[in-house]
Image (cartoon, rainbow, N blue to C red; front, top):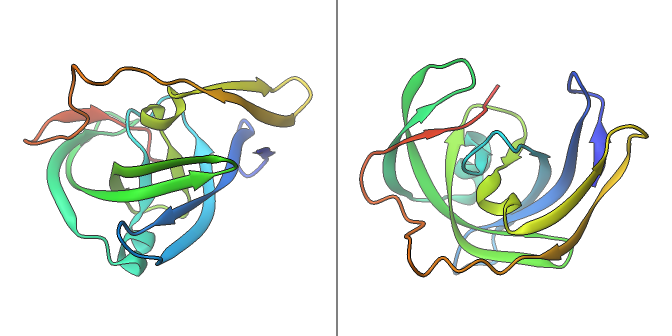
Length: 147
């Protein structure tokens, strides 16, 4: 992971591999670590290139308070030594991905913004999600930061 000075203020990011489930079709791209995003966001052009199929429709509340309808898609996400299968993500018109709390909350991450050194992933948490579904079966409002 590194800090990108393309954002103001600089933001942590890393290269993430997104793979279409049950295939070897994948793309690697820059993903901003976004603790303000409830769910991971993929650029629409990546969704199109991977040929992902819409799963459900949700209402999304963006950083500026606008509410819009967006499709969700399932994708496999991998970076460093971590892999997450069948992760439900939202598509948006943007150039990079946002790695949201749906993934970040499973990790212990150290960010050193004072020195702009590379953030590091320490280890993976194994939360018990057995009592709550991570699949959105009907339109719901979720907050993301997609600017």
